[in-house]
Image (cartoon, rainbow, N blue to C red; front, side, top):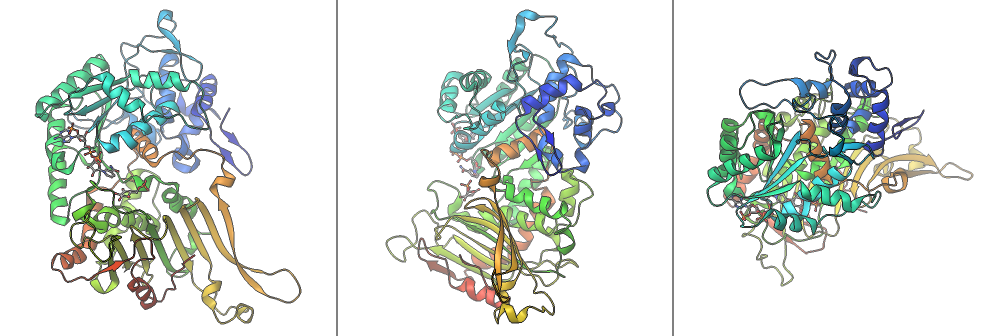
Length: 602
Ligand SMILES: NC(=O)C1=CN([C@@H]2O[C@H](COP(=O)(O)OP(=O)(O)OC[C@H]3O[C@@H](n4cnc5c(N)ncnc54)[C@H](OP(=O)(O)O)[C@@H]3O)[C@@H](O)[C@H]2O)C=CC1
Ligand SMILES: O=C1O[C@H](COP(=O)(O)O)[C@@H](O)[C@H](O)[C@H]1O
């Protein structure tokens, strides 16, 4: 059994063990299995552990379909099962049908000749029709090759996708199923921590991968995709995910053709959209209106892969599951918050960055979502909508030029603008941002993000106020700043959670030191960290939307940035050139000082 509860920890390893073991104890009534699968799953709403089980349901239910009849009217359905059973109005449904038993289900007992051995070593029926199909539109593109297919395979390998999942690639290139399979194969690897049956799993995954040449008429192309999916689904009730990984110019056409010609009527359809989410408030609004005229909000998943990091989930886990943090989470105890996301690399040629710049690329979704999740009000549950309802984007004050520093890295040739950049497109952004609500009034949220900087760094620092009337002030010395408590959530370099505290230096006398309590992930957890695309794809499969921007969040985020974007358009903002590989514009240091914060550089 790989789910172990001890007094201090709970560990989760491979789902295969969990599920195969669970099958021996689960009954066909999920609500009434004490201590068994039913209890683990049904406690999802109330424990953070259970977040780790999202995605398992597909795996488990795939297997349950062989052996159990699901309850006709489950009572007390938890978040997951609610999602699974609810139906939406109209033909386009977002209700997962994974609890249903396919009408044409063939049990292993009935058809022994169809048996093969699955991941868990248990028999599986490979002829069974898929309960989930995933189509990657833009399958021959860079993102699909580099990230999406590898993430899908990793999920498949680890048992988070149904064995009989259907994977479809779509683009305009005239290639075959085999061509796509060999393109994908060239980027697939098995995880270093479990390489069992790797070749078998690779082959199984590739054998479920099909290519559709959509040609230059997406309407026709999408109906071909639909026909191919139906053929593979064989009339069974199957849910579909469409990952739109196409250039922005193609997005509207692809989305509308997909909406009218490729959605299933027999299960739910979810659509993943890649960044950028519009160019400005107006274009984004138009795009949103267009999407909402084709899809329901709950079908839309706007993906920003940087939000799939542990760091982001830890923002809420640390706060809401630790009494030592939650009561401190306000202006009463927090002095300032720093969000740092720096890259040491320059812009990747060919990316949409040029012309868009760092504000649209990184600040609009990643940085503002990070702040929104950090500063949110307590949600009533971990349900995606409950979390999205509590993000405070609409309370964030619009940015003013006086609180923003922009920069662009110099080329190696001196002060000339990089050929990859369109004019003075900012590659660096620093700002002091305020949230006008009771919790955060007056607390500066300092942002620093840029390309071509001294190091790759991604961290959030929460600095607490000085201890009022600190009786140790004489032992600390004049620089009280050095004695502030800090909570640091670091993703790069070396994922870690650190808490800076004051302690006594050993020896006689009373000298204080500021030290870091250090939870270094690689020391504590000896495992390969899944890529953030895996995390987010699993969220889409589970219908968990909390890390994806809803349309109203998108609009609120543009609202915060529009005054700056307008000033840039009018050439009213200066863009400071900085050395590639340096610390960025010096103006940022003055900005922190103006907001009463000493920037921590290490
Ligand atoms: N690459 C990255 O790291 C990131 C990318 N993104 C976003 O992801 C999306 C894809 O990026 P990327 O893979 O780099 O882009 P590419 O240009 O490498 O690939 C685009 C894909 O879309 C297909 N395509 C282009 N036009 C159409 C069309 N009219 N109808 C159907 N398919 C079409 C292309 O194939 P064909 O020409 O044969 O049709 C190709 O498969 C973009 O929106 C980008 O902004 C976001 C974050 C990071
Ligand atoms: O989404 C983006 O992320 C990358 C950084 O991603 P990483 O996984 O390589 O850390 C960033 O370079 C790019 O500009 C942005 O669009």
